Length: 282
Image 1 (cartoon, rainbow, N blue to C red):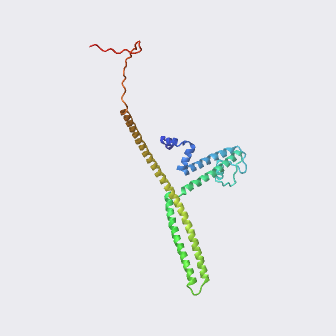
Image 2: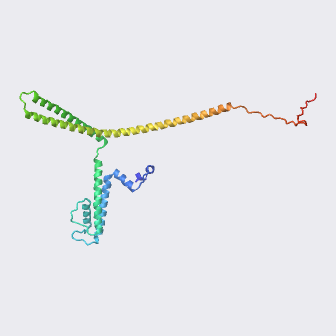
Image 3: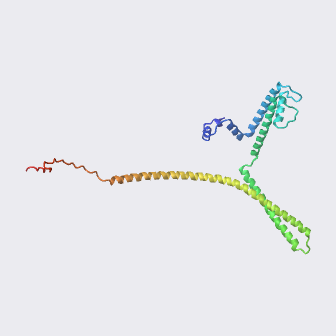
């Protein structure tokens, strides 16, 4: 399909080191339409296994429980695939027995996949989980208030029948004591359920907060990277300007070049002294 032959899809797959092979295609189809894939696979396997079983049993000596037609082979594959096994038909040849064993294994695997797909389909979405948690929170809050009120009521009845009556009725007191203990048990159980609900809600909120925090950190790091790059450019330009200024100062303060003075060589006289220079005649 175009989903797997598109150039953009293949580019993204190459960047993530994903090969577009048969395994990847099957996983993608199981994610997009798992029910259709399982139904097509089950029906195809049913017909192919029935034909192979009938071909194996064609030349075999079939007894009382042998497979004599294609419909019988389809029936045998079906009851073996769903792990029913009535026992009215049984394969005779070793080839047919191998096909029956493979049908049982594939039936167990397909049943597990069907259960997994149904569990994923029946799972609540994120919005539905929020609504469910809100409803359970309201219910537990009402139950908690009712249990607390029952504790206070039974406490008052116990005090009333013990201290405010002239004749103490121990039977009534024991009855209110039992109700008092039952109310305390209900109160503790409601608090435990409410704590579990809060933990589940906090896990969902923590995951959302973690995702938001990661996004904010990524954006902050990206902004810091851009600002650091800008600062490095400014520092490089400043260093270049400083280097040019230092070169200008060095050139301006350098001493002028020294001129070369030419000298004449005088031959020494016989006395070892040099002859005085001749003065021009006037």
